[in-house]
Image (cartoon, rainbow, N blue to C red; front, side):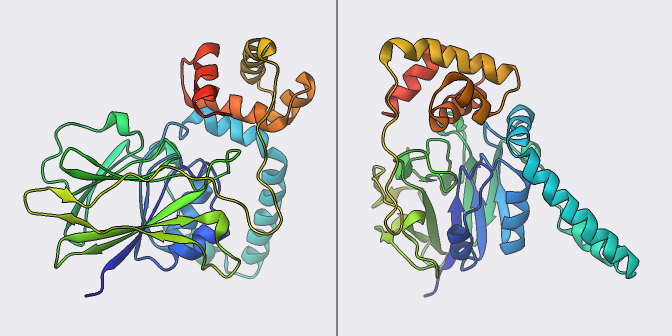
Length: 312
């Protein structure tokens, strides 16, 4: 019996890759587990299919202001194009219809998304939240939990409930894989299957590397069998491109450098400016900025600890 195909993504951080969009067009519904990053991503997703999303830790006013500074020039140029197009449409008498269509498809701002969400799709009760650590203990009747945040693809179990993490399909972080998940629901058998998609291995036409996984059976008692956890693996880019290597900064300078980057961020400087002023790799500056902005209250030791655990 045919199942219902669901596209599950997370941690887009302001980017919807063309390869990811092509895969999502083959799905009936899209689930986004948070860290959307930009309103444009929500609009693009909802133009493809019905989309359910939750708010992630980067979906806040502060991080949005930071990204706005980073993309100010391109955004201004795009705004000029949009305004010109709307002006020409208004002269042709078509502005009202165009504006009405735009309002009808207006996406919510990421910071206005709910922190958690319970929905029912094709007979399955699904609970969504960005950070696995914040999952509520009382989830009666929930068949499936979907979360993100870790950037690590996982198919596992939380108690007797299947718990899925599609990984991150946004900007690539050094050697970390870029992944999404295809979830197929079979209501008649109350069964689901998951498939891992490595986005960087998808050729231009949209079909590429995927990893089929064992089906997950959910009984009426709520027990999930056949689930497993798959560790993140290194995934190469297409063609001759090579994955960027580790960034090397002398250990004795690391503490001072991270502290300086935090000060630069508080002063409102852009990543490229921070890198140039401190004579460091722009990728390293971006990584520290992201950790500082997405973990409120974190100190230098906290950032260094996270960097060590990520083996940067």
